[in-house]
Image 1 (cartoon, rainbow, N blue to C red):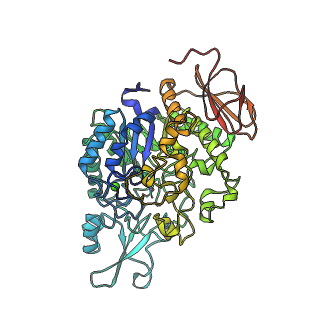
Image 2: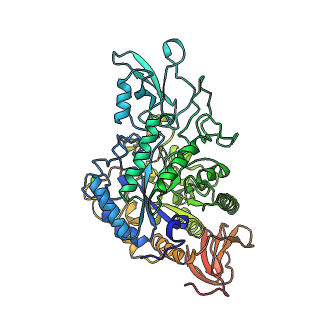
Image 3: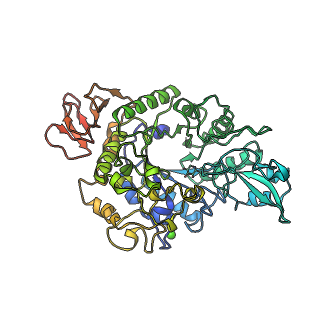
Length: 554
Ligand code: NOJ
Ligand code: CA
């Protein structure tokens, strides 16, 4: 058993949570798609990493219009990924290793294949079945124009017109994401009750926590006439809670309701919100009677810059402390270009634009990216709060930037008319072995093509190398488990381009963001992201230091 960090019911405050994207983790039956049995078979690997919890991205029945975030039935397992029995086995296997489990709850939208949406399509305008979603008549002559100018996140319009049974054009329905993902109407009591039941369904099966997808979007201002919302992302202007579509004050009633459910359980279930809002608004989701944490993408959105990191850390910690929660930290996830690639791009090159324009290799320095990614991770793992890791980052995996266009799966590719490449490059199935079918992902092929260079990053290669990224992650997670005995952090004076802070009397972290080496602060190096030479910290490196006068680590 690993030692309890900040233990008991507060385990989540400084957890290391490992995100599994189930279709791309491990394929037990060889159909090319990762499955729950595959994850169970890799429980020893997860235990060897030392993570506190696993977060599973959706594994529910889905037509895969959005990588599983289009959910047909929230209370079942996609037959391609297994069964509820497989799920129970996974919970048992993880708990046996003292690893907790988060599942993804997707409450903003459904799927056009869900029983409720099909019922709504059969029903009349104005019927109770349609009221569970957001159906409206169109504007203009014979309703040919969408009811409002609201854009879909995947572009272009957030409205799709239906057809009546006789083939004539009908009402429109709202989908903030793909057309296959109709938004629920959170003013409807059936919807609220369905999600209460869904949370209980998974909590009863032993799930420890929930990740709440687009938590800030559930409640909309649907008063007539519908207000204009031509710009999609403008979270901060004005941050009053009266935007048409996002971060409305009323959404917090939903989370107060859910908190009562979480607290019915022993131990209480916990939740982390994906609320893509500014730091002061973000912590509103984590008030003591709402959710526990909210994702903080400030590091993910920071360039390789000491000042950006410093500002992001300072503001995140201050806001979290004021709200009585702990911060979260993220460098990579299933929606973003992997950080080993982001940090290798030439200054000023925006990652998704680089991908979309053919991933020009002259703009990428893979070695630099890999060094900086390791340094960033070691810095992140020294911060108070919870670190959310994304499968494959522990191998230092770069983005797969050259997936053939006819193999792309992400709706962003089609819906942006090929202007954006989408997120498949970070969702390519993991390499477990340097040889063999699909690099050990499974006995068959893999649903997204793996490049030949995946062999260099295979788990069995890195397992045996004490200097590999995998070895660094294992060492860092284990050390952190012993050292993170409180949530304090004090910035220390440092040279230009260096970020140096103390966590406890026996634990400091120092990162060199410069292009040349700097002198290490005094003390004993416990761990570093690069091999060290004398008392120098190389460019793009982090070291954890026990100050000379410090008590020995426990
Ligand atoms: C956020 C998820 O992380 C992303 O993958 C998904 O496309 C959207 N929410 C819609 O569910
Ligand atoms: Ca499979």
